[in-house]
Image 1 (tube, rainbow, N blue to C red):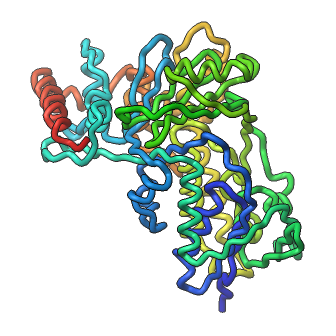
Image 2 (cartoon, rainbow, N blue to C red; image 1 turned 90 degrees about the vertical axis):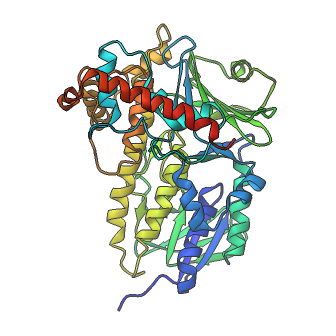
Image 3 (cartoon, rainbow, N blue to C red; image 1 turned 135 degrees about the vertical axis):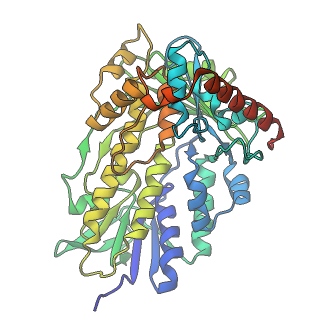
Length: 478
């Protein structure tokens, strides 16, 4: 007879701890699991904002968080994609929108026909066939109304960091999570497992399962279990500027000589992040770079150091590391919230049925390590495919080693417009296609079956799709 988890303790702050506490309480509180969140009270990074991908909308429903609450508490705005500017040098830009890269035709993805036409002289970008991209550029959103369009349009959110944390905390209280102040915790290990954590004031929390969003708990069980990885940048400066009006439906990721600047539109302000390599740009230049890219006055905080670490085994004994305790996320493509959501959701799916034996940890570690690798690959493609010239930072970034999986993906797409599928994929094929094509990769060849469509029929289909998009967007919601 198994011994179910009766007490779960979450340790840490930021977004990771309350998200995990809320998810566990809503999923297992009704089964009698008592959930305690030991809040470390860490200072929230000033000016910080979050990029949430469309999948988080469904996760919010599981957490009981509605859109209206996000808008009110977290100054949320709709996120339909990210615009990458200057990554190929000059003023060129492309939009990675959250939707289909055109409509399939003659049983083939549109990218196959697009490749064939590009080689014959077509100058229409792949993103021009994407309804989501066209809508985002014109400040429109919503589902396609004309069945002939047959394209999906998705949106995520842009969120104020502090407001989102406050919203999660309020939801935890409503869900019955016991919240205690828990700074300076000392973990106590017995028989290879955590049995309690003792705080600076002498109070203690015991649990059958511990979720660590800080790193101190998992570190007591597996001190050498963190590996350093090379990151392209080591510094970040965050800031805030006046709200954009009208509000764009996409963020802007603008490359500069030593890194990039991300502009995140919120309801009450414009969040600005300057990410850079301190060997190529001094800290005191970051503020000027923020205002140059934002085109307005920016209030910035101090420079913060960035790390790049990964814990290959986030679940050890009865302790599960999430968020930064499990590893640092790439600072592109909404990776931070994506990896956190995947970690919390996977923990819910693999919730231990026996507190004395947790074989679920093996598959959890495999799933999360794989997911982190694939998410990191998606971010790494931007650096490998950048075409800036004359900047030492970007030359180095382009030449940096990438995983065998990413190298295979790029090579296969460049050869024939197809994608290799690996385990733990976190991004859809159309997202990869829009990014690679946006970075200037035009496949050298295509599926031979595309030749079964004659030229006139293909041109007619291209015109049909472009007309459908042009007719659809004006009727969508602002």
